[in-house]
Amino acid sequence: MATPEFVLALRERIGHDLLWMPGVTAIVLDQQSSRMLAVRRADSGAWTPVTGIIDPGEEPATAAVREVGEEAGVDCLPIRLVDVRTHPPIQYANGDHAQYLDLCFLCHYVGGDPYPADAENTEARWFPLDQPPPMSARFLEQLELALSDEPQARFRT
Image 1 (tube, helix red, strand yellow):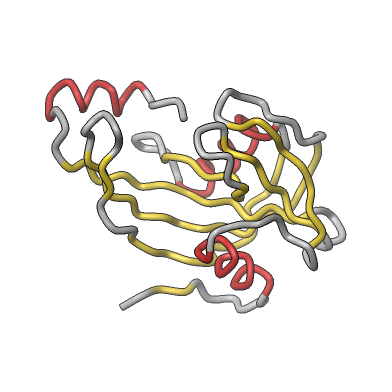
Image 2: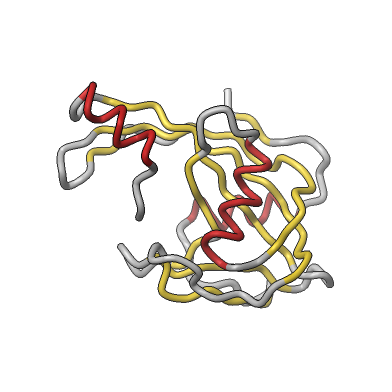
């Protein structure tokens, strides 16, 4: 996963200390809402929706659209916020500590053919909703929430 320049600059100042990172997950559905876009991560081989870090000053929905374009070569339109969650702190192999706030958006496909548009992923393709790729419980839960058509986002308290 490519580390954004602003994170590298922060790491020069704080070393391996805990860094709070806002991020996005984009559940992208095709025009018929019968398939979802997924990417296979280069670092772990796991299938996931497109995810990424929000740049400083960037609107979260804009970050979701940008990440989908950067990672999968697909244009999409954000429809609604689906889920807001905080992940437990993690430690990377290099010693860096981070904790992520994840904002999950339902997005609709606008155009483009999926392909691994950057080095973060080895594959990008559509999966039928009744046969999603093998994904973690988190992503399966977020997919279910996106498909629920409930207008409100899910918040944990």
